[in-house]
Length: 74
Image 1: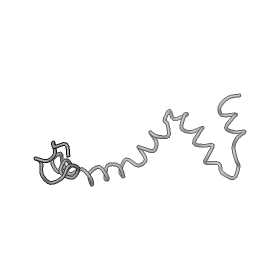
Image 2 (image 1 turned 180 degrees about the horizontal axis):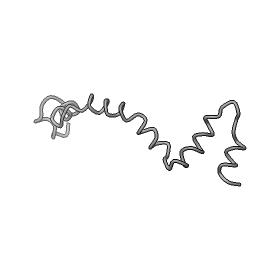
Image 3 (image 1 turned 180 degrees about the vertical axis):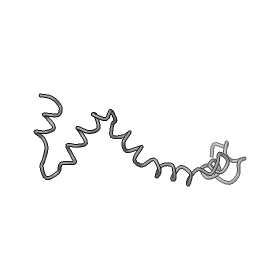
Image 4 (image 1 turned 120 degrees about the vertical axis):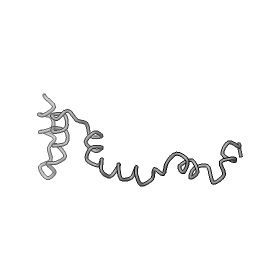
C-alpha cells in the first residue's frame, strides 16, 4: 500500500483538509514547519523588529540599568 492509498483510506469525508496536509506537503517537497514559517514570515519579521532594540538596550533590559552590576554574581 502506498502512502497516498493509506491517506485515502484514512480520509474522513467530513474533514478533507486533514488528508490534504499529508499528501500535498510531501508532493511539494516541504515540511509543516517550513510551510508555517513561510506563511507567517511577515508576522515573525514584525515581532523581531518590535522587540529588538539593539545590543546595549537588550542587555539593559535583561541585566538591569547599571552596566557595572552586570558581571557581579548577586
